Amino acid sequence: MAATTATTWMTKGTIVIACNCDYGCPCNMNALPTQGHCEGGWTWRLEQGRYGEVALDGLSIGLYADWPKAIHQGGGIATYLIDERADEPQRAALRTLLEGSAGGPWAVFRKTFVELHGPQYVSYEADVESRLPRVRAGDALDIELENIRNPVTNETVHPRVVLPEGLVVKEAAIVRSTRFTLSGDHVRYDHSGKYAAFGFFQYFGP
Image 1 (cartoon, rainbow, N blue to C red):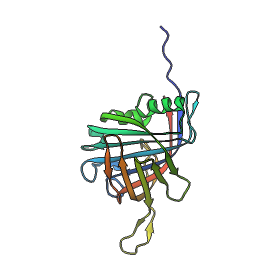
Image 2: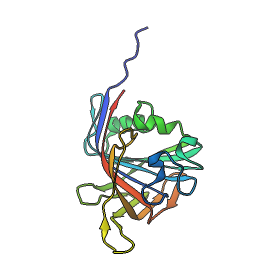
Image 3: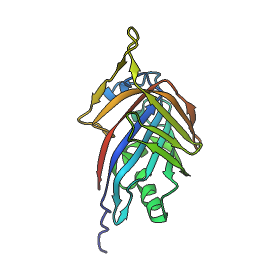
Image 4: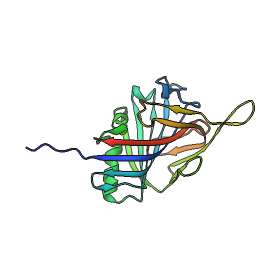
């Protein structure tokens, strides 16, 4: 029997991150979450993408979860979102990626879930061209960001994190959410006013 060749894929664009941690998120430094458990996730705006012969340019996807401890300790319940504008070949490709079947960061996260629900096909409004990105995914997800302010001077500050070994992003701007609400399949929370970040991502597989 001939060996099956894995499908070649690539994605790049802007990632928006939000969770229940305090500003900076200690998980970035391999420490435990601020509250001992993690509730949050990621939205990826695919400025360019391809899965085999299927183009994924301009589509948005999201993965959000509730882990009882740190992400790497597992036990998470997760849900994922796919841009409703995707046609059926694109939807199939994005399902394969988000379910962790093709490698990339999604394969690592899949190992931390005991349940993965979805997909929910949603209408995305992902404004990543503005100074601060904004994401709305139907009635499932709403993220608005603002710069962190110095508590003494009230001036805005602009911290960044550099993660050479980072799984989802190598460098990101650290901000705060003014709104972060999720009403997904089996996963719901409101962590407005907590940690958020955004930056450029680029992944390849297999």
